Length: 189
Image (cartoon, rainbow, N blue to C red; front, side, top):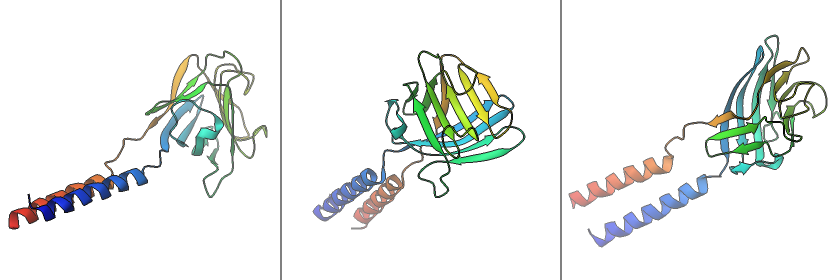
Protein backbone atom coordinates (compact mmCIF):
# COMPACT_ATOMS: atom_id res chain seq x y z
CA UNK A 1 0.00 0.00 0.00
CA UNK A 2 1.24 3.48 -0.86
CA UNK A 3 2.66 5.41 2.12
CA UNK A 4 0.27 8.34 1.46
CA UNK A 5 -2.78 6.06 1.68
CA UNK A 6 -1.42 4.26 4.76
CA UNK A 7 -1.05 7.60 6.52
CA UNK A 8 -4.61 8.62 5.54
CA UNK A 9 -5.99 5.31 6.76
CA UNK A 10 -4.21 5.66 10.12
CA UNK A 11 -5.53 9.21 10.52
CA UNK A 12 -9.04 8.06 9.65
CA UNK A 13 -8.87 5.28 12.25
CA UNK A 14 -7.58 7.66 14.94
CA UNK A 15 -10.26 10.27 14.19
CA UNK A 16 -13.00 7.64 14.16
CA UNK A 17 -11.90 6.24 17.51
CA UNK A 18 -11.77 9.74 19.00
CA UNK A 19 -15.27 10.46 17.70
CA UNK A 20 -16.64 7.21 19.11
CA UNK A 21 -15.09 7.77 22.54
CA UNK A 22 -16.27 11.39 22.74
CA UNK A 23 -19.83 10.60 21.63
CA UNK A 24 -20.33 7.84 24.22
CA UNK A 25 -21.48 9.65 27.36
CA UNK A 26 -21.89 6.43 29.31
CA UNK A 27 -25.54 7.15 30.08
CA UNK A 28 -27.98 4.25 29.62
CA UNK A 29 -31.64 4.71 28.73
CA UNK A 30 -34.08 1.98 29.74
CA UNK A 31 -37.61 1.47 28.41
CA UNK A 32 -40.36 1.08 31.03
CA UNK A 33 -43.61 -0.74 30.20
CA UNK A 34 -45.38 -1.83 33.41
CA UNK A 35 -48.95 -2.95 34.11
CA UNK A 36 -50.07 -2.08 37.63
CA UNK A 37 -53.57 -3.12 38.66
CA UNK A 38 -55.90 -1.51 36.11
CA UNK A 39 -53.24 1.05 35.23
CA UNK A 40 -49.82 1.28 33.63
CA UNK A 41 -46.52 3.12 33.61
CA UNK A 42 -44.68 3.57 30.31
CA UNK A 43 -41.71 5.67 29.29
CA UNK A 44 -37.98 5.87 29.88
CA UNK A 45 -35.47 6.06 32.71
CA UNK A 46 -31.91 7.24 32.05
CA UNK A 47 -29.08 6.33 34.41
CA UNK A 48 -25.44 7.37 34.41
CA UNK A 49 -24.48 3.90 33.16
CA UNK A 50 -23.50 2.53 36.57
CA UNK A 51 -23.99 -1.20 37.03
CA UNK A 52 -24.89 -3.00 40.27
CA UNK A 53 -26.74 -1.36 43.17
CA UNK A 54 -28.02 2.13 42.26
CA UNK A 55 -28.48 5.22 44.40
CA UNK A 56 -30.66 8.23 43.59
CA UNK A 57 -27.65 10.07 42.15
CA UNK A 58 -27.30 7.38 39.44
CA UNK A 59 -30.71 8.33 37.97
CA UNK A 60 -30.19 11.20 35.51
CA UNK A 61 -33.66 11.59 34.03
CA UNK A 62 -37.03 9.98 33.40
CA UNK A 63 -40.18 10.51 31.41
CA UNK A 64 -42.92 8.28 32.78
CA UNK A 65 -46.54 8.31 31.64
CA UNK A 66 -48.79 7.23 34.52
CA UNK A 67 -52.19 5.87 33.50
CA UNK A 68 -54.64 4.74 36.22
CA UNK A 69 -57.36 3.87 33.62
CA UNK A 70 -59.22 7.11 34.41
CA UNK A 71 -56.53 9.77 34.06
CA UNK A 72 -52.98 10.16 32.82
CA UNK A 73 -50.06 12.18 34.12
CA UNK A 74 -46.45 12.40 32.94
CA UNK A 75 -43.57 12.59 35.40
CA UNK A 76 -40.55 14.43 33.97
CA UNK A 77 -37.11 14.09 35.54
CA UNK A 78 -34.55 16.76 36.46
CA UNK A 79 -32.87 16.99 33.04
CA UNK A 80 -36.13 17.67 31.22
CA UNK A 81 -37.12 21.23 30.39
CA UNK A 82 -40.51 20.24 31.87
CA UNK A 83 -39.09 18.78 35.10
CA UNK A 84 -41.95 18.27 37.54
CA UNK A 85 -41.08 15.35 39.80
CA UNK A 86 -38.57 13.87 42.22
CA UNK A 87 -37.16 10.47 43.02
CA UNK A 88 -36.93 9.20 46.58
CA UNK A 89 -34.84 6.03 46.78
CA UNK A 90 -34.28 4.09 50.00
CA UNK A 91 -32.33 0.88 50.46
CA UNK A 92 -30.35 -1.14 47.97
CA UNK A 93 -33.19 -2.83 46.09
CA UNK A 94 -32.65 -1.04 42.73
CA UNK A 95 -29.88 -2.44 40.55
CA UNK A 96 -28.79 -2.27 36.93
CA UNK A 97 -27.15 -4.52 34.40
CA UNK A 98 -26.08 -3.40 30.94
CA UNK A 99 -29.54 -4.29 29.63
CA UNK A 100 -31.96 -4.27 32.60
CA UNK A 101 -33.15 -2.28 35.60
CA UNK A 102 -34.10 -4.67 38.40
CA UNK A 103 -35.97 -4.09 41.66
CA UNK A 104 -35.90 -6.50 44.60
CA UNK A 105 -39.42 -6.74 46.05
CA UNK A 106 -38.40 -9.23 48.75
CA UNK A 107 -39.18 -6.67 51.48
CA UNK A 108 -36.09 -7.32 53.55
CA UNK A 109 -35.59 -3.98 55.27
CA UNK A 110 -36.90 -0.64 54.08
CA UNK A 111 -36.69 -0.56 50.29
CA UNK A 112 -38.56 1.73 47.94
CA UNK A 113 -38.23 3.84 44.84
CA UNK A 114 -40.79 6.63 44.62
CA UNK A 115 -41.16 8.79 41.49
CA UNK A 116 -43.59 11.55 42.47
CA UNK A 117 -45.02 14.93 41.48
CA UNK A 118 -44.82 17.66 42.68
CA UNK A 119 -42.54 16.41 45.46
CA UNK A 120 -42.02 13.22 47.38
CA UNK A 121 -44.53 12.87 50.18
CA UNK A 122 -47.12 15.11 48.49
CA UNK A 123 -49.64 12.26 48.21
CA UNK A 124 -50.28 12.85 44.50
CA UNK A 125 -49.16 11.49 41.14
CA UNK A 126 -46.76 8.68 41.94
CA UNK A 127 -45.24 5.40 40.81
CA UNK A 128 -43.71 3.46 43.65
CA UNK A 129 -41.71 0.24 43.68
CA UNK A 130 -41.76 -1.04 47.21
CA UNK A 131 -40.28 -3.75 49.27
CA UNK A 132 -42.11 -1.94 52.07
CA UNK A 133 -43.91 1.32 52.84
CA UNK A 134 -45.20 3.36 49.84
CA UNK A 135 -48.74 2.49 50.82
CA UNK A 136 -50.42 -0.03 53.10
CA UNK A 137 -49.36 -2.75 50.66
CA UNK A 138 -46.11 -4.64 51.08
CA UNK A 139 -44.02 -5.89 48.20
CA UNK A 140 -45.22 -4.54 44.87
CA UNK A 141 -45.84 -1.54 42.67
CA UNK A 142 -48.33 1.22 43.34
CA UNK A 143 -49.61 3.90 41.02
CA UNK A 144 -51.77 6.89 41.90
CA UNK A 145 -53.10 9.93 40.03
CA UNK A 146 -55.35 11.60 42.61
CA UNK A 147 -57.67 8.60 42.62
CA UNK A 148 -57.86 5.02 43.71
CA UNK A 149 -54.44 3.43 44.20
CA UNK A 150 -53.52 0.78 41.63
CA UNK A 151 -51.43 -2.07 43.08
CA UNK A 152 -49.69 -5.18 41.78
CA UNK A 153 -48.03 -7.46 44.32
CA UNK A 154 -44.56 -8.85 43.62
CA UNK A 155 -41.91 -10.75 45.49
CA UNK A 156 -38.28 -11.40 44.67
CA UNK A 157 -36.33 -9.65 41.94
CA UNK A 158 -38.23 -8.37 38.89
CA UNK A 159 -37.07 -6.68 35.70
CA UNK A 160 -38.54 -3.17 35.71
CA UNK A 161 -37.08 -1.85 32.44
CA UNK A 162 -34.85 -2.95 29.56
CA UNK A 163 -32.50 -1.09 27.24
CA UNK A 164 -33.35 -0.17 23.70
CA UNK A 165 -31.55 -2.09 20.95
CA UNK A 166 -28.24 -0.33 20.35
CA UNK A 167 -28.06 1.35 16.93
CA UNK A 168 -24.88 1.16 14.92
CA UNK A 169 -22.96 4.37 15.73
CA UNK A 170 -22.60 6.93 12.96
CA UNK A 171 -18.83 6.74 13.37
CA UNK A 172 -18.88 3.10 12.25
CA UNK A 173 -20.76 4.05 9.06
CA UNK A 174 -18.36 6.95 8.49
CA UNK A 175 -15.32 4.73 8.99
CA UNK A 176 -16.70 2.03 6.68
CA UNK A 177 -17.52 4.41 3.84
CA UNK A 178 -14.14 6.17 4.17
CA UNK A 179 -12.35 2.83 4.10
CA UNK A 180 -14.20 1.85 0.93
CA UNK A 181 -13.27 5.24 -0.56
CA UNK A 182 -9.60 4.72 0.27
CA UNK A 183 -9.63 1.26 -1.27
CA UNK A 184 -11.28 2.72 -4.39
CA UNK A 185 -8.63 5.46 -4.59
CA UNK A 186 -5.87 2.86 -4.26
CA UNK A 187 -7.27 0.83 -7.15
CA UNK A 188 -7.41 3.95 -9.35
CA UNK A 189 -3.72 4.75 -8.84
